[in-house]
Image 1: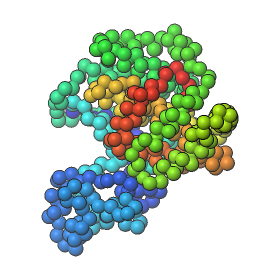
Image 2: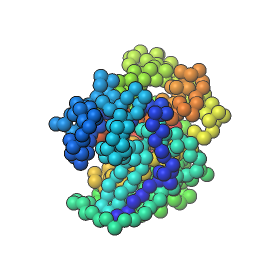
Image 3: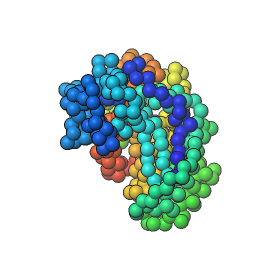
Image 4: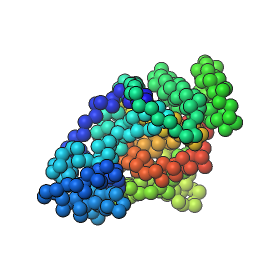
Amino acid sequence: MLYTIPDYYHEFSCIAGECEDTCCAGWQIVADEAALKKYKKVTGSFKKRLRRSINWKEGTFKQDKNKRCAFLNDENLCDMYTALGEKSLCRTCKMYPRHVEEFEDVREMTLSVSCPEVARILLGKKEPVRFLTYESNKEEEYDDFDPFLYSKLVDARKVMIDILQDRSKKLDLRVGLVLAIAHDLQVRIKREDIFSIDNVFEKYQTEKAIQFVEDKLTEDEDYAFITKMYQNQYLMERLRDDWEPYLLEAEKLLYGHLKTTDEKTQAEDKERYMEQKQQFHEWLKEHMPEYEIQYEQLLVYFISTYFCGAVYDGEAYVKVQMAAVSVLLIHELMMARWIKNEEVLEQEDVVDIVYRYSRELEHSDPNLNLMEKLMRRDMLPWFKKVY
């Protein structure tokens, strides 16, 4: 078995009660069977607390009216951990924020940016992310797993990450190249022409292709696509009650009257948005020049985590588009925070936006599935400039 981790994997250490948020609220915590059996055998003073705090039929921890885990105390610390020790935790609690993508004989382990501390580590990292591998003797086999397609997806992912981390090129060009590769890759997957995939890698590493993509990138912002992607967020399951009011406030700051049918108002709102965006980019370049590095790190994060999942559904382009759109939406929320703060944005604002966005998307299978469905419905033209 081959294991892969990002080079910052071991930098993470839970800061527990010092964290500005908690991973024990806002979503349902499912306990594994081994943990549930262990809880049934607990004796002593904590026994009653366990009995009344677990939904034994569903195999989940109960929550209060604010969706906080029944074991979470007012200091955002776990009473089960305090009473029974670290070994008492279920697999979900032991693993988070570690995330595992499983492939035949491969386990790709990442840290989820839905954790504020992980987001802080990744966004503070200046060097390109590297991926480390190690082996174990464990082997597994999966039905309906195409090892040849998987190997080509791994190759494609490496090429795309190398391009994204080539800081000699503008970020828009890097994103355009990656989307172009994924687009052409998708065409070959659909027509089951896997053997010609290597030609795609070679094509987009030539100077001629790079110039072609650069010429295709338009300077006109795709305002209609951006607002549509933003509004798609309202279709998703809500994990936290404060997320939709947050989106609505940001929408008003960014786009004004999106639901109006008055053409003059629409034109004025669009013009104001374009002016604010230009001012925001100028401000970023002067006051937060590392923002492109942060976008790069996030793009690499999303692509490294989800792209090879296309071995199961064949949706390579959708997964790259989801990465690009996720960073686009984070960018929009950053601009809204900047407007709200009267043209000020701190690093902690960026951390807050990233982990909150990630929690809503990445910790709901229905949301991830819907996101991919929406990406199939509203394909992003790879030659459009969106950041």
